[in-house]
Length: 223
Image 1 (cartoon, rainbow, N blue to C red):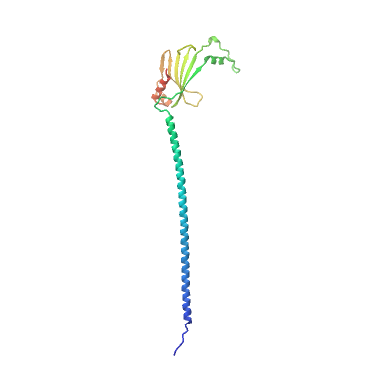
Image 2 (cartoon, rainbow, N blue to C red):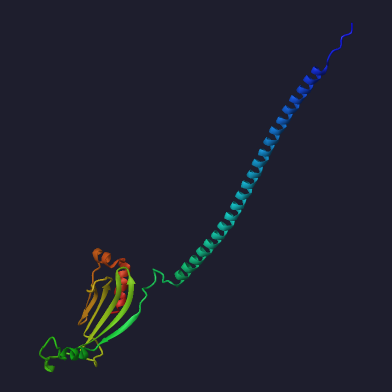
């Protein structure tokens, strides 16, 4: 006996399995495509970051190079200025630089000024018989070393016609901001009697210089 088998159910089952397999493969391909796109996006972002970082480093290097070049120029300029100043400065072992100024004090003018009537001080006029006129000339030497600002040499004459002074002395002014100047007599000569200061450690410390420099000042007095 020959029986007829209906293959439609089998065919339907096979078609359904094929569809399931095709759908699974399509989903897998889509997942792979998404992963591939994400990886490419990450690669592009990483490349962009790398390129931006490279540009930043390149620009920073150029800026640093320009800054270094400018700093080098400034250093060279400063060095040249210091060298010029050093060339023009006086060696510390050389003699003390000085500028001499002669100041003539006219005692007559001072007396006349003192004899002028003062509205606030009614003093009696000075009699000409009691006036003693002396002429004093000062030589000033600019020192500006240590605590010493200047050196003075005074010469006192009996009158303007006298060739030789009767009294000579030499002193220094100390630096200071106060109105009252402090000085120190280095040499004093009266009637050929010459007296020179004795430089103690306290005096040298106050002058702010060595014993050798202090003795150079005494020689610079010239009296």
